[in-house]
Structures are given as structure tokens and as C-alpha cells.
Image (cartoon, rainbow, N blue to C red):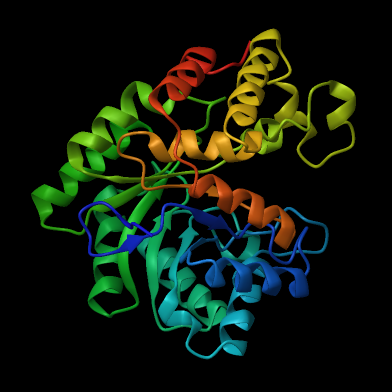
Length: 320
């Protein structure tokens, strides 16, 4: 399988990233282990999580996903060498802190390493911008972690174009590590990334791994009315796509899927993979069957006419 580089770093990955947000939450430990096993057996190697996953769930404090991955790694000798492991720092962990101060980053990194049961994080990402901390302080903390061999490459999530550009300028002027990867909200339903971030990332050779690649499940086609989403964990996120434009996009997605013997989710992922400058889409699975379907998207190559139809149906995103 062809691999793609993460920015200008030496990290290369298969063109699909498994989201770990569900591990220890909607996928219990046994299911999470089975998903990770199938993922690796299928020739894929890129897993993304965060220290905050899944603090939002009742009784959880954060770190649940990292802990599940760590126990899986401990039970699979040699598995660590097959993975490119990404996690994130900066979201509110309650008493454990938040933000991108040097002190918090260095403390949080040690905690993530313990939970993941590894000596290094391949891609360590600022989960959200922190305007209260100087960019240089944040980047110097990452520099120390890289020098210590605890982090290989750094990335940013949820940064706007002006702040990402500023961070890159600080890195260049101060001789500090730079963000080699961006994690934006990006899908056929959410195309705002293309306006300012895509030109910047392509010009600066920043890798891109978009989250919510299936628009919180909307692009699977299983939510076509408010009733379909009622009571679901992502009901509010899906509701904003249930518009005439959103339903028209699903019609085109259905048509392209039929023409290529695929599922709508596979087409949605294949469209992202075909975008210039994209390293990999991120998507999570709560069962092995669901994972198998998603991985089919990474193997699907869409012809130019199908991509053009999807582009036209989703131009500008579909909110409103």
C-alpha cells in the first residue's frame, strides 16, 4: 500500500487514520482490541487519540482511550513497531490541567506515555489553540520533548490559518520544531478548511489528517431525517446537515456508491483521500464489521467525473 508523508518529517503512513475516540467508551476493551487487531492485519498503521478521550462520558476522567491502546500494545509484543501513534494535548482535563503551557505539555506528555505504555509518541498534537501562552513557549516545550526522544513530530488541531501561519513563522525565526501536521474538521459536508488552511498547508507542505471525515456519521447515509438521529450521541451534530442541500448531497453520494459497488461512507472517505495535500482522513469504528467497511474507502479510487460530481454537490459545505 502506498504511504504518504506527514509534512516534511520522516513519518510515513497508510492513507487512513483510525480514530481512537471510541476506545473505552462506545467500544469496550475487547471490541477495541479486536478493531486494532484487524486494522493492523489489514496493512494499516496510523492511530490517533487524545489525552481527553473520553472525559465527556459519565464516570470518565480522560485517558481512557490511551489506556486501552496501551493495554493492547502490552498484550501484542512487537505491535508498537508497526504503528504510527498520534495523541493530543491541551483540552481541559479538570484537576490535571489544560492548555499549552510548557509545564502542562511536559506533564501531560509523561502521563500519555504512561497510559500508552510506550517510550515515544510519533505525532504529538496541540489539540486546540491556546492564545494565553506564547507560541514560542509551547514550541520550546515540544523541542525539549523531541530532544529527549519522547516525541518525534508535532502537529496542530483546530488552528485557524492566521495562527498556524504565525506558529510556522515563530518556528522558522527561532529555529524551533514546526507543526508538520494539521487536524481540521473536514469532510464533504464541511469544506471550510479549503478556504484558507488548504492553500497554507499545501504551500508549507503540512500534512493534513481531517477529523469528522464522515460528518459525525451523516455521510454514511443512515441519518436522513430528524427521527433517524433522535436519541443518538451525535444527534445535534447530525441535525445541522438535515437540510435540502445535505439530502441532495446524500443522493449524489448514493449514486456514486452504486456505480462503483461501494458504500456511501467508502465514497466519502475516498473523496477525501483524493484531495490534494491530504495525508489521511480520520474515522472511528465501534465494530470490526464497521472497520472493514471504512477500510474499503481507503482502497477505493474514484474517477475524475465522480469526484467532480461530489465537488459540485458539496461545494462550500452544506450547512444552512
